[in-house]
Amino acid sequence: MNSPQRTSLFVYDGEGAAQAGVAMAIQSLRRCTKNTPYSVSRITPQDIKMGKWRDSAALLVIGGGYDLGFISALGQEGIDQVKGYVQAGGHYLGVCAGAYFASARVTFDEGGDLEVCGPRQLAFFPGACIGPVFPGFLYNSDAGVHAACVEWSAMDPVVKHAADVTQRVESSDASTSGHTSRFHCYFNGGGCFVDASSSSSSSSSSSYKVLGRYGDVVSCPVAVVKCYVGQGVAVLSGVHLEYAPDLLNADSPHLQPLLPSLHRGDGDRQMCLRQILQMLGIQIVE
Image 1 (spheres, rainbow, N blue to C red):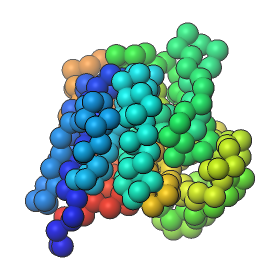
Image 2: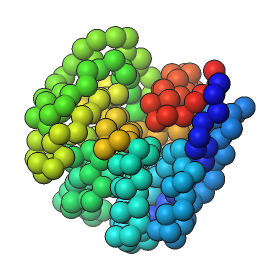
Image 3: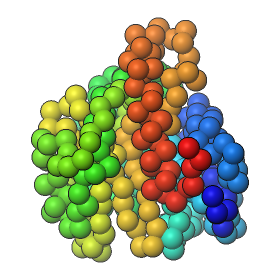
């Protein structure tokens, strides 16, 4: 393959990041980019604020944790660096908390003990990320982990207007064209992407592509979405496609009942993760 110009894949590691998630993302990215020129490393909030990383970055990943920590650590300067990087042609992968953080609004556990609700500045997806989709979430625990059924179809049509995004989100159809894969993968507190029509007019000209849906939830809400941001691309996911079942704690009583279905779906999970990385400009060796 032709050598990519930018070869650094950065995984956010700072306030708000779940350390287990950082380690899992690094492992999965290294597996996917084995025998390629890419390097995978952690990046701190301070490094992000300085901005030098943008010269070599092929991808910025922000994974699970809590997005208020991201906001506290990055501040306005760091958020502007991330937004500017993507708008100028960069690539962003936001998973779970990283997806809430990159939506225009967070609605998390509204009315509950863990409630976090409010607007967010990145707004790569110009609607709300609402969750948790499944009940039982607890911070720093796998007690609320689910094996979420994902209906994946990268063939879903691109929609260019916010109202159309809402119609797709509210549709009960998993896909309108192409082959749909159905498999289970790791979920712990993630959201779904809804109500884009309520976003500001400044984001309404962006286009979006629905990549995956929650197949075991009424109306099949959107689980994974690809967002076109300026010259760049962001993929946001409520499910942990980067979590490989062979790297999970097999001794956990909460995970043990889920591992058989996670292992059965692992081939599809890997395929979807590789597709996402390719959408984000990463050259994968098959």
